[in-house]
Length: 344
Ligand code: NAD
Ligand code: ZN
Ligand code: ZN
Image 1 (spheres, rainbow, N blue to C red):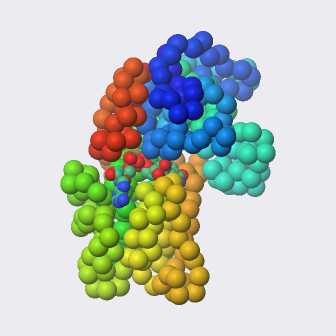
Image 2: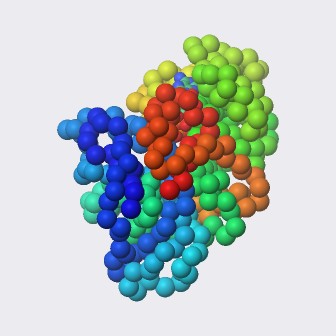
């Protein structure tokens, strides 16, 4: 089968032919119907050889949906041909966090060498993929696979971040979304569907800000050194009760801290190398700063339910498997508006 692989540190991903995978005991083989292209892969492919944690070649793609093609020995409860989404942050399945469905915070994954598909294990950017356990699958029903696939990360990750801040997202509050790309443009829609807050979106280009308004941002602000002042003006000097940073670079985390209100949540989702020091007087009183990872299994089901209800519509650009390297190049250059989805 064809697969998109990162084969050599520093080199561009390549489309190659690899043996068709077969499901072992307990595993499920999926015929991939769609795979999403996430900016985290760009980060992974920028890591130097001495810090690269996975073995190469690595089949990319940690957002995947497909139809069940074959069941390994001992697997039941799934029908061949069923349309499913892959829950990506695989855990051990038995620790206390996994027992809560929070496999994204598995306490033993690292120790046991368990890696998500596309981030260590062979991923979804291929004609077929192996899923290690049927518990990682959520039925898609009649959801369009192309629309649904980004929800497994670009939907789930912001959903998880928003859900933990719901107590602060009361009517009259303001949420700031920094970076309105794959994750950010879904975050805006989730905020509008789950809360009655005012949403202020920040990005660096007009077309990204236009998409942000189209998907529900009340205000858009160019992300520069004046952005925090502009947000303070828009909030009567108070600032935002929740700031979600989907860039996470030094200038954006600085903006995030500078536009936060007293007793706010600042959530750094982007892995852009920025950090925000917390100490008495460095941020408004009682500001909580956190950097969450992906989301839980039940949250994925909730996000898909929101999609079933028509509350989220991902802005997608589709590419063939052969065009996947081009999609990565465009994402790297900031030229994807919404999410790129690969159709094997
Ligand atoms: P993306 O490229 O689709 O979107 C990023 C957006 O940020 C783009 O619209 C870009 O124009 C904008 N941007 C760039 N610099 C900016 C700046 N200075 N100010 C404001 N906007 C700026 O990326 P994505 O796939 O949505 O991923 C977003 C980030 O989240 C990445 O860093 C990714 O690695 C990370 N991520 C983290 C998790 C997690 O679990 N923590 C999960 C998925 C992705
Ligand atoms: Zn991702
Ligand atoms: Zn676990």
